[in-house]
Length: 252
Image (cartoon, rainbow, N blue to C red; front, side, top):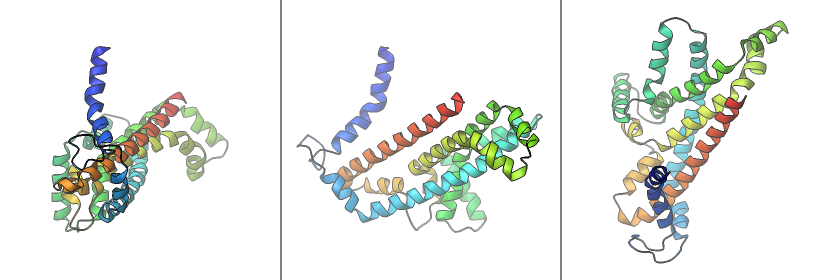
């Protein structure tokens, strides 16, 4: 009990301090000088931050969609695959979830440069889908393994074929797993720093990279506290929704 409580304090005390400092009227946060919402007001007036936020949200949404589509197709292929190659296939699909971010970012950069692709939103999308794909595969594959094969056979007996079978039977049954994986992919894309650093190009900057650049200027620190507090709240909400969908999937 004591050990668990100490672990929670160790994990969440820095976040609590950050959130508290975002309401501190002091510019440097050395001591408490009263409650203030000034830094949140300045945050929403910061043009570069708002541009990076919109760019990151766009990228995260595209990543979630791409990962859900490719991850679902991969999970279906793995579910139907038999033999010794299945384990290798699954390992290759999920390996990016365990690979160090620096190694993945550098490897993707070298690959993209060798293809003479201009770095930008497209390369960021490819990179983010690559490292988030495995999470969708695992969520959908777990749901597929719980489905009763008789449901598909019964639908075929009733005349459902092809796209109709997929749209009316499989997709509603798989949707909780697909959505949970998509929410995880969205959150991972929104929070990524290391991989994005290698493949972002010279144009738009993602929000985490913008925050990293702002850390060099002390006058921006209170705004960063406010921004990180909102990002933490948003990420926690996304993961909570994903866990709700996962529990719903397990219950059914």
